[in-house]
Length: 109
Image (cartoon, rainbow, N blue to C red; front, side, top):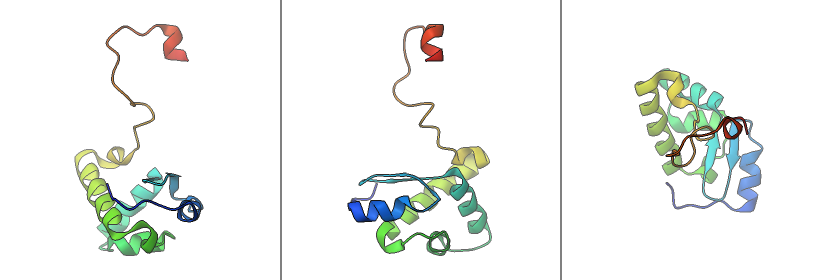
């Protein structure tokens, strides 16, 4: 992860972009749509920086370290699992798995 943190102004600027799911002072979560578009454009031979700029991102705010890290992470995930590898699974799989049985009430909550 990059050491650069975002200011409130930068967070507000980034959150306006339709390809940003969430943004905090420490990181950005991109939409699955952007990740898929990114891989498609990368296959056409475009540079990572160019793809981010064409998607409306300010490269000076995000930083090249973050862009290269995202490119590497998404490319490896795509090679391993295809488009499904680009899907953000944190919402459904957060935390440590439970060691006890889960009741129906807890599953439906």
